[in-house]
Image (cartoon, rainbow, N blue to C red; front, side):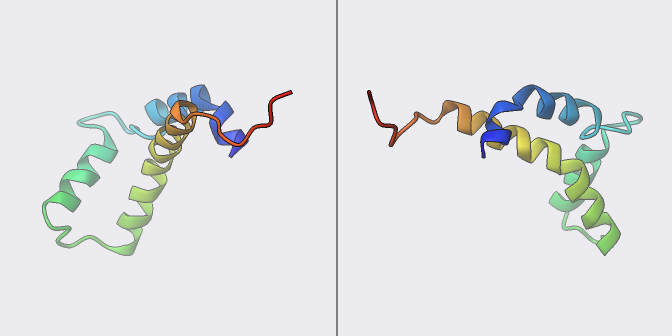
Length: 78
């Protein structure tokens, strides 16, 4: 968890570059989200894998931000 918490900038860059690529005509992840929201008709296993690969940087970014916002508990004071 320490790696995820400390690398928010890396996950932000990965989300913007890998998570949105290809950019034209619309970001790929948005197209997949629209497809899934529309009922995922005709979506195959390769499409789900593609969705997971483009969504992974976003997932890691969200987890990293949540860990940074979470107050530290259980630490011993000196």
